[in-house]
Image (tube, rainbow, N blue to C red; front, side, top):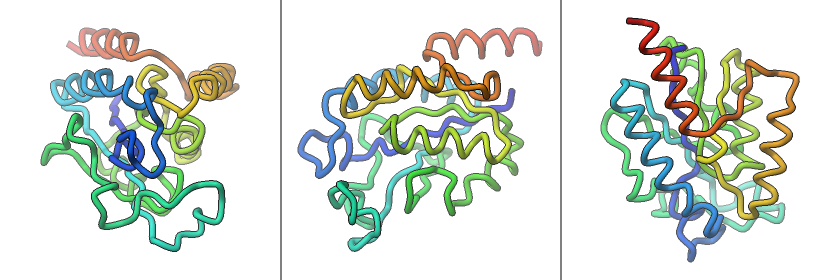
Length: 193
């Protein structure tokens, strides 16, 4: 497996409780696990991509229930301090839900010879779900880290995880915990030696 971690929308507008579209406490809970994921990825040389909303002030999406958020060029689209990107990380702006839609994520992953994406971030029912299915559609295996993703409502998150776990796309699409992914990565590293 040649993996890359795609961390979606861990930006101020979603994570800070006073932001325009906060995920709330559920979003705060995943920060320590995402920090651990980032640490493991950096140690293993696994690329890290932060995929963030960067919308226009009059964006089409704001015609929905969605409040204006993630406006391009504002502090609200910055990755939260707790997950501060390093120079080796890629910070990628997106205008829509999926990390793949009209971005250069696909070609970037192919240039890096990546075959598997590991997904974490917010919101499970929107950007994580969209990115997972688009990853499969672009020919990548997808691992969704259920304890590294969050929705505003825990019940919504749990429901989406149950749907993904029952997907006929297994094993191309897998749901697992961060500890299971770490163990899997260690096994592959040991076998490769």
